[in-house]
Structures are given as structure tokens and as C-alpha cells.
Image (cartoon, rainbow, N blue to C red):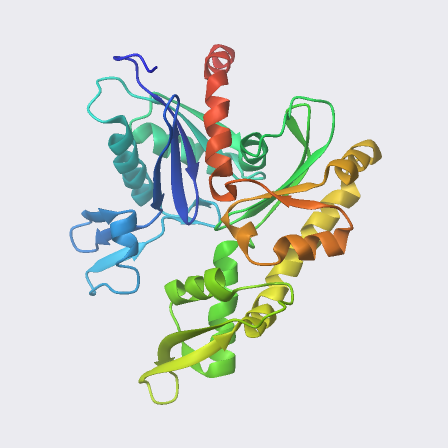
Length: 335
């Protein structure tokens, strides 16, 4: 039970596409798109989260709906700070005490990028800010005991980055972070539809295609979906039918970039840990890993058993939440 008067401990998965927040003792309390709508004339924030996402691509000239995080890092500091402030206030309510916050960051971020996250969270009202690497949080969230001296491989495919890490004794032994993930899949779909059907679609339509019929491994049954876009010849709205076999063509290239990155991390992994991974398999987490057939493709190319974690989308946030239990120790160490 949370004591009244003490600021809550909050774990935040600050994703490029979605912000998921976990409160110690309560579980996941917030899941909102990381989108902010700002009036470009007055710089006033008009909407945050779900409400702002509905405005994407549909705003008049003076209102700009943006994602303040790009490829896993802060691209617009001021807007990120306002977004965090909104979410922290929404979670923390009207308490006098500021919360301690643990935030996930991609592996391989620079010191400047780390400082930007800490500063933004502090300005947004956090009493103390701790950082945790996404693959480690994902491993904890997937239920892996990372403290043991044996190798576990985690592939966390988020919105902006894919983080791949071999974890042993609570830390990353080998890791890499590449800027190919959910949003890049959407970009490849937009390009493909433009080239194949000569129509322009928005990122929301591309995301719907990815979720509903997207695949990176041949399907037994070819599924289809109707979409509307702007005909590039006439400039008028046009409806076309897209098939999952076309999605396979569109998405295989970015999927293979992820497979190649996993391959290169495995090549650099010490032999004893590589043997552990061969026995235990590769764990996939994050919303991006739910693209149909990605686990099969990775399994076929590496020859290692691949498992998708339960509640893959919330894995990083859940892991951050479990890591909150060690906040007192971290607090003492930092002092």
C-alpha cells in the first residue's frame, strides 16, 4: 500500500510512439501515444496523448501535432518536458510531494541524450530521476532472472529503436541499438504504396496496414484490406485493396536489417554465453515484434528458438516497475 504523503515511485517507458507509466503498488496506470498538439502562434499546448494523436495529419496551419521523440531520443526538448509534466501530474494527482521517476532509454545513447532525459523529467516535476536501459527493463518485464551468471538475449522492438542485448549478471555484455523499428516499418509501407499503387497515404493508414495485414514471413492465406489515399496523378481520393503478400514485399527489407543486427551481436558474444542463448532461446519484446512472422523469420535465420514475451507491448514498463523496488538502494548509491 502506498503511504500517503510520500511521492509515488513512477516507472516510465518513454517511447517514440507510446508512453507507458507504472506506479509502484498499482501496476500500469497510463498508456498514451507520445503526441503533443501545440499552437504554433502562442506555443500553447492544446492536447496531449490520445486526443493529440487524433489530430495527426488533420490540423489547421496554426496547430502542429508532433511527436517530440524521434528514434528513441528527445528531438524537441520543450515539448517533451511539457508532455512529461502532463503525464506526471495526471498520475501523481494533487500530492505535495514530487515522485521519484525511473525512465527507460535505448542502449547506446550518448551522455548528452541521457542528460536531456534527466533534465526534462526534473523540470516536469520529478524529485529524483534514474535511468535504465531498455533491453534490461524488457528482460526483467519478460520474467527473466537477469542476476544469474548465464546469457539471455533480448530483442526489444519499439517505435523508434530496436535494442538488442545479451544480458548476464544484471548487465549488458554485448548490445546494439538500431534506428529500425515500428515507425520505420510504417515509412517502408508508405513508400511501397506510393510506388506500387501511385497513391499517397498517411502514417496512421500505414500503421493500420501493418497491424491488420502486415507480415514478414509468407502467410498460408493471403489477407486483404481496403485503404484510401490521394491519387498522385489526379490529386483526388482513391480506394485500393492491399494484400498481405504486398506487405511482405514492403517489410522484408527493414525486417532483415533487424535479423542482421541480431546476427552481429551473436557473433560478438562470448562462446559460453552464446551456448546459453542457444539453450534458452531469444526473447522478443516491444510492440514492433508483433508484426506477423517476425519471430519465425528470426528463428529461421539464426537457428535459435525465438519466444515472444507475454504482454510484449508493456514489457519495458513492467520491467521498469519491478526495478522501482531497488530505488532505495540506487538512491543510497548516488548519495
